[in-house]
Length: 121
Image (cartoon, rainbow, N blue to C red):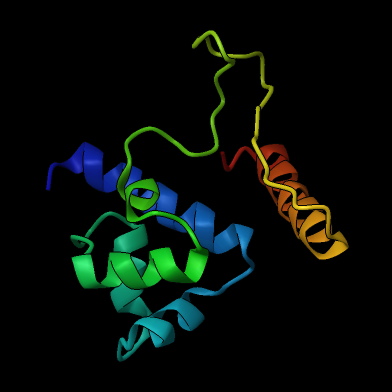
């Protein structure tokens, strides 16, 4: 796996984990790793993501595997016309009319906003 792709995968894994409030230790346990360093190497881009682990993580995060391994970020810092926006971020959320879904999306948006404030994304 080339270094740039590993870097994108690492970034996607970290974003999904942080947005959901999981620790590396929790994810490592979920994947059946002996300790968190095995998972940590994925987020550092030092190990190739195994397909079996990608499928498990996609199920946990309720996303397609493609979203985890995509070079194109799922959380985009680009406007609809493809030009870099001035520090603004456009995010698409799904709503189903339930308060539970609404509250979940609000919490995710708050975490994304915190990450933006810290220049983590």
